[in-house]
Length: 499
Image (cartoon, rainbow, N blue to C red; front, side, top):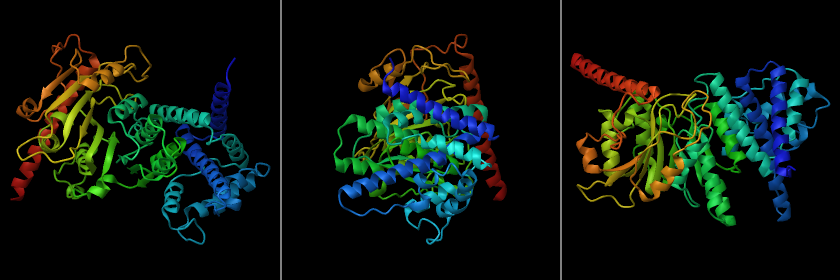
């Protein structure tokens, strides 16, 4: 016999399938399912949160004024399914004005919550053109309960599955913001966020790192009421540049039980400052920054080391925002670890002022179907006190070469046996050397031109037995280095011509 949890899991899966089928019948493109369901989920979840706060206030004999009250509350307009055309007209007219108007009399006001609503609903749309179709989708969403743990867990899984399918169907659409769940969990286990931390992701995407950190903190300790309140409002911070992604991340945090995350819609690199006050820094930073992008020359002025490569700039941003005693885990492309020029200057600064303790070399193809770029996870801490003059904060770096992350290194990424992630986590605790792990003293890294790329001393560079994908990635990495050198040479020649 199946228990109630399994039964409810099937119900939730069926509810979302019914909603997607209805959108499909309406002619809505599959890539727009996520956006349509996201803002409906958001309003339903917000309505439940308001009802919960109202009950708590009544219990304490305190007044509580809903932000979306009366006809604007989900629990009011979503029940009007017998009049679908009237419902659609109300949502696209009066409700949308309430959610997006900057006029305090027409909208929600001027505080942070009102601004968040405006950012979201200014950038999403309703893809249901017919009242009857819209009402049927709303009916399905209304069956979900965001206060129910089973619903939240299943919805999180379905949400991520929808994102993966969208990314696979629409190359380049979702790839920049979906980080595979098992990689996120591994990074969180190494960095170990705890109650009292300020956790930051400068490009939070769908908030995978922030959501997983919230779960990890709750599971690691029994939190007091005061700690739970701090977890809600003063623990999670992030910036995201894309409006739809911002909505997905905001929604995902609500699914993870965090309604008060401090999430901003902005360009992180434009906001960057090299001189962040210590009180504004973060004790935990977890991120998979976008890479391969180019930054305009004018926007590089706020960075100590100027570079057009976004990955180089994001590493500097993370360094500038990590608090004393803070811990960071960052996914970066292979080139950042060995390229000369700006990347080398940043690595030098990183090794001198931060303790770069671990580099996890991920297999090429780990982020398929989004990208085949070879990546690494670099883990570093900021010492509580600055190293003495002439000393480096990093003494040695422990490397682990991951060749099996538990999934095929193909577009389909089907699960396979033999994942080395448990071995990595076990060895990491003692920095144990093995067939796939080794330690390199910082002096040797400095001699190599601050090269931090993983070169396994236990494996001969046997091209005959290396996977084809890895060979292709190796060739691409070398070509990338050549292009970088040509770019640097071009800049030098331009400056000479100007003189």
